[in-house]
Image 1 (cartoon, rainbow, N blue to C red):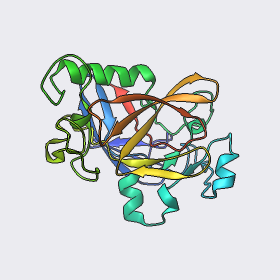
Image 2: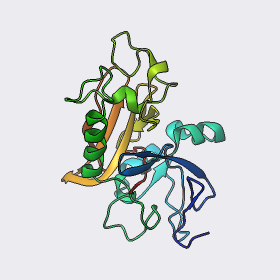
Image 3: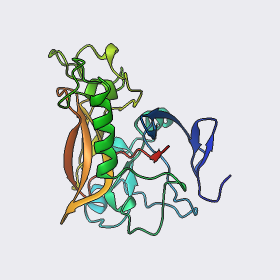
Image 4: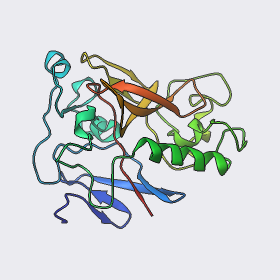
Length: 228
């Protein structure tokens, strides 16, 4: 195995914990299509695990948890882990992405959205605006919506892009878990100033990929990507 902690093996990544992740090429980017669940940095250093709400709330340092503090291996594989932003802070000398890969920046997310729109992945096949949520969301797991074009409506038509965004929920900075089935949240490595950093969100009752600031102490999912 590479000393970077992950290697590409036949189109998938294998992390330091021996978890494997499939990938998809979208335009000039390659993305993992599962939420990260690694518990160690590439050098083998463990990432701090904080299930306790009070300790999570008071943790301005890198930490991870699982949704609702589950210990079920299947749920962990499907949901991945939730990480606070300090894990992906570019100033953190410890890295979770291998050489050539990265936690996406805000610009990386913007490029992904722009590509999907330009290639007709809006749900109504238009090539302007931002209606790409259905093309990015998994077919299963979403709360239902009755509004045509929203992620939770007719979800069997989701995931045309192959991004496979799963509604893995969110952990508030105060330690409370919420939104599983309703939304998926993913970090970027870009700060928005002060206590917040920039992420992306898919909602069951929205048609767009949403730019959303989150408190750095919140727990969000992580995807990795690279340029090709």
